[in-house]
Image (cartoon, rainbow, N blue to C red; front, side, top):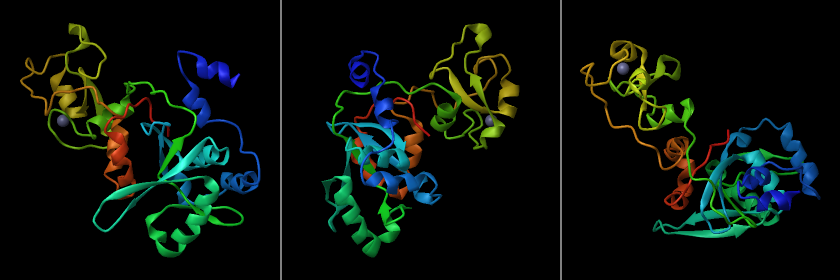
Length: 248
Ligand SMILES: [Zn+2]
């Protein structure tokens, strides 16, 4: 069943691989403990690379551990020396547990942690799928969440930043004038600017866009995360990334 799905052209196998059944073996019991572990570490995000080291998507720490425990993925750990040069080290889960013991001692604050019954383990920032090397889908999903993220919650008319609840999605060229639902025609607008603009184009309303809306090359939610120091190691893998939908 798995094989047939992986072979299908309209590929959904990454999702299936990233979802999947519970882990077998020794670690199963330990990882089962994660299901009830409320430690912060489980909220951490993990970048998933395909076998060719191309960035694919972001998953939760829980899902990453599930993949690791089934030996579907390995850990990529980026180490930077004092000159700032980086090198990548590959670990399977078992050796990572050993490394974690050291990290726990010497650089505890640099990692997110999850607790199992027997030990604590650092959440890896990056994992690499061992068997999957096709490129993922190439489009970022057009939806409200991604639009707000692309525009960083900034009204594209007055330029102010608002909470999501105070923003609406504006059709730059109104639907009544043939404007469509597209990255290039949808922007965040605050309620006041949206009302002022009404069913007009920006020119007709004498309003100016802060910047021209474009289709993002990568998931805008990931760009937001890159601002966070702890996800710095993702950068090296994101330049040629293709993004489908962000998971969680
Ligand atoms: Zn506004």
